[in-house]
Image 1 (cartoon, rainbow, N blue to C red):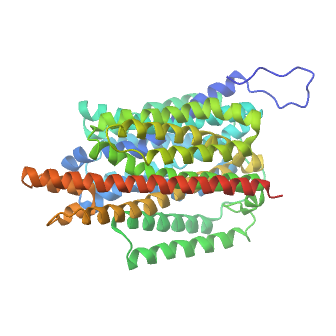
Image 2: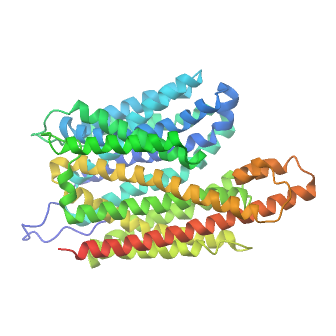
Image 3: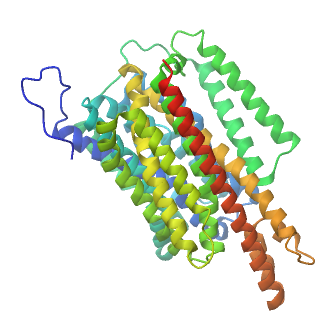
Length: 507
């Protein structure tokens, strides 16, 4: 718990939060947990969903991806909209739509219905992160308490990501595929009941009209860019995908140019002139790029190399989430209070680089324990970076534009995560193919050359001796790919630490 109230004679100290603010923090942490769960939980339901609705391959991809696409596409708009109409109002509107769309999605009868409802969930989900973070900015004025509150906010996302597979797995064992959508409903209803009582309204009294052209440009730029990056991560580069990526970047350039000339921009470019804001955004973005890039290999390694069940793999990632909880709630506030936010971010990035370097040794009989230890070190290093960096992002912006600043942070996270998956996923796939091709196997099935999952499927149709040889070679090749991405991520995070240190020293 944050430290006691300062002496009464200290009239210059910021006001301490009351119990109402702390209960309000608990209320807004719940939708953040559900938001994180919804990003992962549907993946477990794909087999049952496919049997029930029989979607085509293209429809199945849209069912899975449309939620994340529209969350990313509407973050900038929702952050600025919250500043204009009120952050509490936008949060409650989003919660109501999220609950309604979740109920309808659980009982969807066709793939087209589910795609539309997942799209609505994405739009509603885009209201949650910027609204909740900007509310924290105005609820907690004491720096130590605000850092602790942001730690709780980050913890909600970490716990949601960790328990998503566990909750989803349990629901799918006992109920139909649509049940994975229903845990969001009581949480959002609770927020609708408690929000008006516990959360005060905050808005920019001088806000101008939302620029419709900027909304369309930002949505087109984000969707085109992220879709192209994700498509290249899954199927490799092509002329069409590169053209789509170039289009997204060009539209983004037009969007930025427009923000310079309109009176009330969606993207407040002047924030990037603030050194602390700029440094925190860079550290935040590079951390997400490295972490998402290596995490996609960890999940596959646990299940297809170490041969853990999905539930066992889920439990293996719990220490990762626990490190984020401890790092966000305990380490970050104490370290920031003692050493200052800049050194905490620099040292946290360096510690995360050591953790990723530790993952390079994940092989042999101790592979699981080495991997888990590396994940814990990474989470303990990254948690202060996210907690302190997020606090720097929202406090360096004017209070009336806290929603816009929050949306920039979340958009940077979404973009960096997608880019990390694309870059590291493509590099890891190339290494896997090269190593498998050099294993000296005769007649490697084409299916096995693309992914480790394909190799395991192909092995099921081979004689036992050949199958075992193929599986062993494919697992060894994938382990090499994991080790390379862990090493590359370590170098990237270490460079981020050096870059942050240089940016903070610059006047």
